[in-house]
Image (cartoon, rainbow, N blue to C red):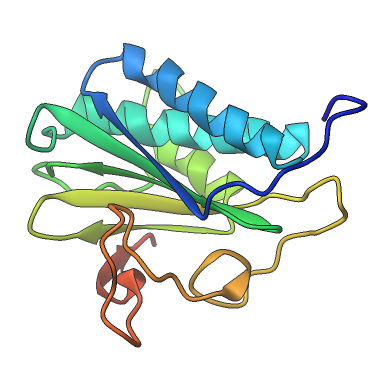
Length: 181
């Protein structure tokens, strides 16, 4: 954070609907980066989060069908100690998983990078398609650090799914997830 700037609380969540084209990756990176920086998240954590959102969104553009309207949904939820990011698409023929490419392969490492950077990640299927989500530590300039003791950021239960739809009382959108190996 720049000297003289005051960290502000960010919204509980952000949603950006983007066209299913490569240029959308930069737009998503900028929106997430701006929110995290405004919240006082350390630059290294911002860099990790924008790298993860880039990987998830790039995979959706390359391998999945768009949601209705030829769009993809990029969502995030931020609190004092973690950020949860997600990309929702219209589904694909395969379930995303971390690959094990040969050393000479030029692709196939993205979800392994996500797995390395995140506290946890996974895939959720619903009637519209797939959502790939990831939770990262997001330490802030006010001294808060990450915990991983529950389903939502900082252990708080999530009250809505990555598309912003309210969850039934007592449920978590991760209860139906296909989690990463």
